[in-house]
Length: 307
Image 1 (cartoon, one colour):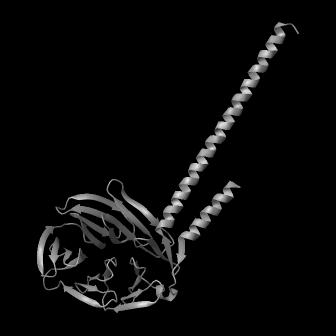
Image 2 (cartoon, rainbow, N blue to C red):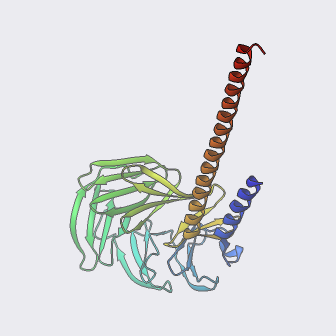
Image 3 (tube, helix red, strand yellow):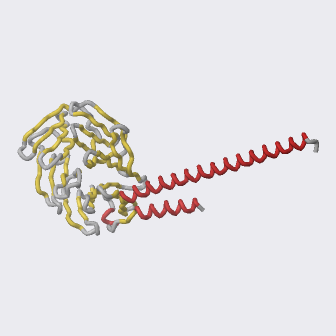
């Protein structure tokens, strides 16, 4: 009976944590990437036609951007200024909440060949220049180079770049590498199909095709969300999102925490019950042993009396 109860609790928690998002499956078909901001808006990028479309939480289209070359969406954590980098066009542009272009930074005239760009804020960029093998800190507002560091890492299969607290995070399709600004390697680990970084304060996350991992300095990469059947996954500060079988699902972070706590509580109760059962068995065994000893003593007394 208790096994049935635990199964019911597990199924109920799973159903409570998962919610299907009201977005037409046709809009999700052929999606190359998907991102979610903290207002519940969804951003869908399709590599087939280089389109970038924004939908609200009800599935209504808010804006759409069409370009002629492939580009990479860095982050939508600030929906008022979303950075998009194009290696082909050698430019980085910012779009507003309606996906209208508000600024463009052209790298062709000033640098060699920029392999990857990271917008640290609304003034500074970090650029990986493949031709000069340097990491460049660049103020695009006044068009000045702040710093330039030799960086002789491989640029093959590079998918993302992040610079935070004087550490350089390099992501490829196969691994993550962490360096100091002096090009001293701090950490390296294998990762399958790494797509991009996400930074939440001092926490650095890695988004892959079907999982989300957290970089922990003492432990390395810790898996915090995974679904092997998912096509695309992402998260904001409140939820995990995934596209599976051309449907979009949302998983509440608080629910997942509650489920974990519930499971831990159940395990604790189970351990307590097992301890109690073991104690009862020991008491019964001790009682039986006591009764047998008493019986043997009575038999010896009878034998002494010659009865």
